[in-house]
Image 1 (cartoon, rainbow, N blue to C red):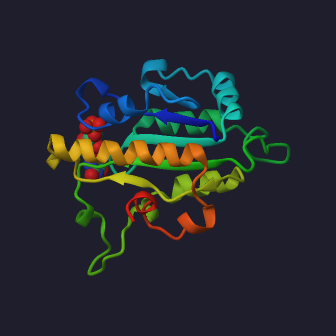
Image 2 (cartoon, helix red, strand yellow):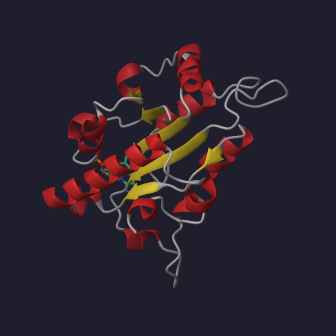
Length: 196
Ligand SMILES: Cc1cc2nc3c(=O)[nH]c(=O)nc-3n(C[C@H](O)[C@H](O)[C@H](O)COP(=O)(O)O)c2cc1C
C-alpha cells in the first residue's frame, strides 16, 4: 500500500465549493495524510525540516490546489522554493526523493474547452505544468499526468458529487498501487485512469 501525502494549498478554503468536498471524502483514509499548507503556515514561515521529514515518510506526493493565474497559489511556490533544498532533493548529495511519485490535482474555474490548443482537441494542461514536471524530474521522481476538475463555477451539487467520487476513487487506486507509470503517462489527464 502506498503512503500518500496531499500537500493542499488553498488560501480561502472557507469559500471553497469543490476542494473542501474533495478533502472531506478522503479525510478518514488510512495511509493518506492531508497537509493543509495555508492552515499550517498562514504567515508563510514554512518549517523546512518538518516538511522534508513528511516527504521522506510518504511514497506518493500530491500537490493539490485551485489553479490561480495558470499556476499554484503562492504558498505552494514558497514551499517548493524552500523545502526542495539543494543536497536534499537534488544536487550532488541530494537524492532523498528518488523513485517517489508526484502529481498535481487541480480545480479550474475555466471549462475544459478553455484549455485546448488553438484549433485542436489537445490540452495545454501538461504545458502549463512543465515547471512542476521539471522540478520533480530534477528530484528523480516520476511525475504523473494531472487530475483536473474543470469548470468548477458551473458545477451544481450533482456535478460536485460526481467529481468527488472520481477523486476518491483515484486516491484509493493510487494508494493501492493499481496503476502502471508507463500506462498512465500516456494519458493527458489522469482522470482517464478511472473513466474508462
Ligand atoms: C486569484 C485567482 C486566480 C484564478 N485563476 C484562475 C485561472 O488562471 N484559471 C482558471 O481556470 N481559474 C482560475 N481561478 C478560479 C479558481 O481556479 C476556482 O475558483 C477554483 O478552482 C474553485 O475551487 P474551490 O471551489 O475549491 O475554491 C482563479 C481564482 C482566483 C481567486
